[in-house]
Length: 608
Image 1 (cartoon, helix red, strand yellow):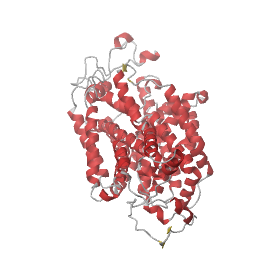
Image 2 (image 1 turned 45 degrees about the vertical axis):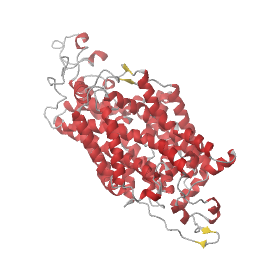
Image 3 (image 1 turned 90 degrees about the horizontal axis):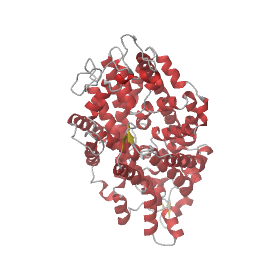
Image 4 (image 1 turned 90 degrees about the vertical axis):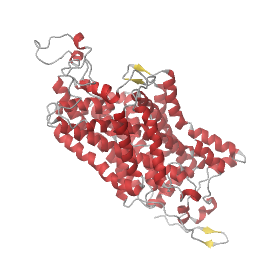
């Protein structure tokens, strides 16, 4: 156990300074559930199973688990430990190396963008949920006001691809050309009723008022989950984090009884050893881990800041990593048992129905539900799970953003600023931005945000600099000693080597692969965005990525002294008041009082 002495101030002897208590979790399990709720989200259900199938089945677990241990878990632990050690949110936690405080600003921009567009998935899920109480389901039939003359329930276009159109030949002797223009009612419900999609980004069209009401309702739910801080969100998350597991278990129990389910599971796990030699498999594994572990968003740092100082965050990080990856693997059985049934019913190869992302949730799965007995029940259960699964990720992301904002408010005025008002303002601003996504061209706006604002490039860039700053600017060994002060022992040396060498190289390697293989954003592989749309996307990406170098240059240029003196001054940590209780006597020379930021610096960070 690390033993430290109280602060000794020259001329005053041993003193104790009154320390304002930071809000903490009521129980440590509140923190675990919040991290599970935030990190375990839709990506575990709609992206991992498809990547596993696409990249060699069970073989994909080899690069996935390897990168989990040398990439995902070290950065996950770093962010949680940093928040717990500094007792600050995503921005102020980087007072550990003030020159790189742009890292915190960057993470706040990314999580703000995520909070803005991620909620649209919940809105669509809520809309489907409200339409799941009818029999037959509205997306199962033609003849509705949103259907076209080309709508058909007996859609055999898939059979034309593999030459195995099922059914009685005499009753089904039409050529593939006759079916080429036919459209499934599921797709028409998604595009014509839910999205009311226009011809492109330059055709915004009218606002969908039904979707706007769903958007408003979702934001109101999020607001009341976080308005009181971790005392309220820490309770709600018990239900939102655990309920999806119950539903997944029910869906799996039902899915394995369906015809063709075993074939689907075999497709999911069937190993293709040749895939290990393909670079794309390793890139997909790395990108998925950084997405699903919610790294680089600052929210994990904010959640960790509410821990008790001596909480064993090292143990928590490993437990959470196992839960996250285990959920992804388990969800694959649920998804592919249903896709196997769907392929069996349609008489097509499973590769024709395997989807990821919104295509799985809003097209493939609703289509599979229409083929089941008691279709409204299973549709209601699935979309309710979808709503709950995304809701905790959403409100914990909002909590992380609000924590960063509140920590930036100077202590002199913090008492007069009500948290409820700050949360309301942030939710309202996001709601106004989201109105652009409930228009007829809203799907194109949504995809811009999804493709650029929180893409693999931005998260990898963020994770790279986090490791570099902690390991090489502050010092990996020094941070390991700080962790020992918190948990009572040193983490295994591999963690330090990952922060210093392995993880930064991994992040930069995948980042460069993304840059070299960059492809402009498109919709359904057919609509190509105009140049100005792509420019807007790059502005979203660079708005966070440039925060780091711009902030470094600004601080170096405005600081006085030689370059070496500026570096030493700007990389000296600004300790919080809680550090005064445990910093050793030999560290007192490096201790600085936690003075408020200079006016020019505060103005710059606010503008950024």
